[in-house]
Length: 430
Image (cartoon, rainbow, N blue to C red; front, side, top):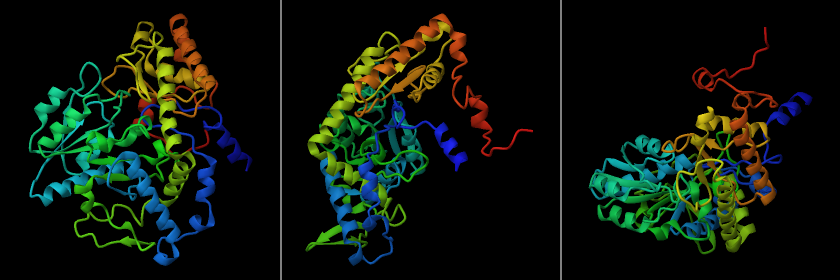
């Protein structure tokens, strides 16, 4: 018992400090969510029970679907996908089935150069050729480059809005019109919905398919390979292709509908990761519409506060304001031999989890920061002070910074060797 307790104390924990982890929102997971998921009526269910005995669970799924459709502005949602990338693939398979139903064999998917790495991977896994569209000097999609790459071969444009740089795509309506004019679909990566929830809806911007990361926006657990949840919402013309079964209501009773002849089929065992659905629904009920909107506003405010405070300490490659996250660059520290990785290691030494670095690839020495809505100003100020101390150390004693972290259980690693030759089992020293 002491051994495992000691090991657990070596892990970084949200109860000790916050995760300024850009791109992968690390929101607080309320204890109320866990209480709801542990209720006997949910926790003791078996997925093969008769429908008459799981009416409460089916009703929760039905109500969660309707809440999410209202939040993102679509007609129907599947709750089956087990993660964000799984949601991407599911959405692309529905888009693929839609085009094939019209006897159109479209072979390309357009992906911005700032996209999450899972976007091109999901498109390739679904059998598409990936076409990259570049970003302009302002960090947003180069609309002229997009127009040049649109054709009747294109099945979809995969887009994150706000994008991976934390910038809102201001020409989104124009891009939607261009994409639809070629017969293609517009896909929304919901990784950054934390900036828009309750304020504006992807469906109203012209998106035809929307995946949601319940762990990023609706406070379900994140990381460790799952279990996660990545629901996908679609507009009416994609509804026939939703995975089966869907949850339907008839005369006050809920049932699973398997009779969907144009469905792409089941994409997850049973009906998805049900425990995550309970947690997300609990969060939505607890917050209400006004609370969800306030969460987004607070996230945007926190990000802009940190961004403005760090401007001048780190380089800001794009003009603000940002949305819920921003990308800075440690390139201005290069004269002292300091890189983004040194900033990250210095933050670990000072008690903070390191933000995402070296992503997106279009920003040299990228440092990607997202504070989320639940962090206090005092916490944000402490983080800002830590970055300031790192920048000062970079100028006065860069060798000291290169040696950090010193006080953690694990120091500076050979990360190249660790990635290429991972040692996954501990052995006692000789």
